[in-house]
Every structure is written in C-alpha cells, then in structure tokens.
Length: 386
Image (cartoon, rainbow, N blue to C red):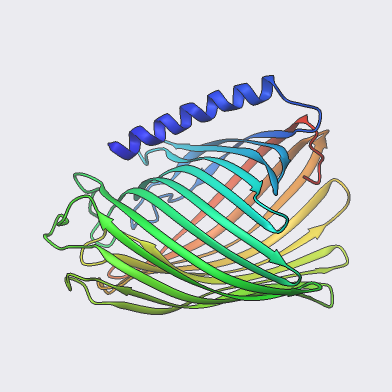
C-alpha cells in the first residue's frame, strides 16, 4: 500500500509537471509525444494448457521532454500502455513508467546525474510497483572516465506460482534495495573498455515470508564491459560474476555468471541484430528469491523503401527459479511489416508463433496476429531522428 501511494503521487506529479513544461516550453526545448492503437487475436494469451483465445486491444502513449542537454539540463519521460482482453479470459495488462532526469556540471570534468523513476507492471501472472532514486557522478579526464552511482529502490512484488497454477499471494512482498556501484572506463576512438563493482543489500518489510522463511540478502557483482565498432558493425557486451548470500541461511547462496552481448550489423538495406543476456531478477515464488533470466534474440530488418520496412525475428527466454528447481522457457518467432501511410502516421501488420514449456506442464503452442496505427507529435524542437 505504501508503494502504491508513492506511485500514485509520482504519477500525479508527472502529469502536473507535464502540463507546466508544455505551457512554458522555450524555443530550445525538445518535446515529442506518440500515441498508438493495436488490435488483434491471441490464441492463448495465458500460455497455459487448455487456455482460451481472446481478441485484444492495446493502447499506448509516450511523451519525452528535454530542456538543455543530457549533461546540463533536465528531462521527463512518460510511458503508458494497456492491453485489454476478453475479461472472461484474462485481466488487462498494464505497463506504466514515469522518469525524471537532471544533470548538472560540478566542475570542468565532473558531472552529477540524478534520476527518479516510478514503474508499474501488471500481467496475469505478475504485479510489480517500484520507485527508484539514483545519483551518479562521472569524472572524465582524457581517455579515462571514473563513475560512482548510488541507488535506492523500493519494490512491491507479487507473482503467481505458474507451475502449480496458483493465484497471487494474499499480500505483496515489500522490500528495499540499496546499491553502490563504482567503476572506471578507458576510451580510444570508438572503443571503450571498463570494470565496475556492484554491491547491494536487500531488506524486506516483513521479517518472514508467507511460508516462514527470511528472504533478506546481500549481493556483490564484479563486472567487465566493452564496446567497439568493427568493419561498420557495433559490438557491445559485459561479463560479471553474480554472488548472493542470505545471512539468515534460510536459502542457499547463489553464484552465477551473468552477461550481455549485442551485435548490430548494417548491410546495405538490411540491418542484422543479435543479442543475448543473462540477469538476476527478484521473485516471490516459494523457496526461491532469485530468478536467473536468460534471453537470446535475432532480428533481420529490411528497409524496403523510404516508407516501408519488414522484420523477421526469433527469441528464446528461460526463467530459472533458483531453489525451486523449476524453469519456464518461451520460444517466439514472427514477422512485422510497417509502412508510413501519412505524415507521422505508421501502420503495422504483425504475426508470431510461440511455444511455452514449464516444469511439470505440457508444451503449449499459441499464435498472435495484430494490426496497428501509431502517430508522433513534435511539440517543440524534436526531429524525426530524435
């Protein structure tokens, strides 16, 4: 309840700030908004055996405002999305976020960036509200960059036990996470390489969870990251050793190698993108505190002409709930066609197939078809490339 109130107040503040900024926009402000509407049919939106199909409608809107620059100024980003299904089949899904950014130079080479963000996620199997405050210092001297960030995050989380087809918990799990991350990077030309070290502490509002276990934990994560341009292709990635320890010993410690990797290669009118990553996420499932999520994606984007494009994509995502000995894997493949039918108005036609496999459950196949329209408004100073 505490986090929901904070989120509501933050959303209300976002609307007030948006109104003030629009009414007082200066000539050098950058402000742009977009709205969209999609509709279609999903043969099994819950991805469960015997699940029913449903028509759906997705509404989404976003607004970006920037005064000054990302090194000396402030900005606001608002995003809202809602997908409505047949209420007899599935509840609506929501994904909303509000972010406030501020940057100020403290010296010739010293920069302070502040970020305050509120997010809301709601699907048939997951509900999460979070409020995050981050302060980051960057110091640049020649080819070296030193940075230090401190994060405070308040989270309210509730997940269904999809493996037992259970419902939501009677009450959300509420916890706070403090994170400190120092690092150093070296840059020459288009190449950057660096190291960082993240240390965090997570504490729960309730000492015991719904089965009488204590979930508080401490995490540390040394990290190596790099990016470069090679023969016109962009490569970027990171590698880290994730460690989590539970001081009350109600759960076994977790040690995993986490990583990110991405390749973007433009070839004439085709852009090839391949990405892969493994991350550690929080979960409320029984006997599990950490979900190791691994994802891979490949995409080929063809620019047919100045007004139309065609994409082919394939994805694989696996969630491993450590301590529960349960996994969920989803394979997705599909195609999208987009065409500009009027100034700042784009139409979309998309179709995809997916296969879901969960521990203890049969394989479930489903398909999704959708059409949509999206339009963009350049309120002040924004360009299409922005």
